[in-house]
Image (cartoon, rainbow, N blue to C red; front, side, top):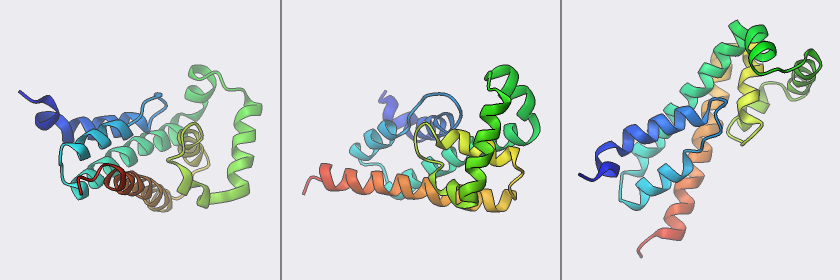
Length: 149
């Protein structure tokens, strides 16, 4: 049994989802491995994007409905830190969500968007554009560096 062929797309979706939460994971290696095995790049782009956006939606929901408990009790963030995050988000506004894919800052951005009650449709649009663009670049770079031609 070739686990990558049998469970690759599911594994990509799960890894993309988990990578978008506050867990320190990455889905790029799974995506690259599946590209090398010859999986359809469009299918990979869609699954990785959907999984990653779904993880960001979880962050948004946590920020919107559980901000005090999650941020202060579980993550041990001070009011000063959350106030600072809100000020930074206000500085760049919804456009900052295009960078929700960036390691370290992306996950907190989606959490703060929920805290600040950014319109969900706007959130979804900007996060999806940012994350899909990132995966498209990864797919392009893989095809450029690892193509057999």
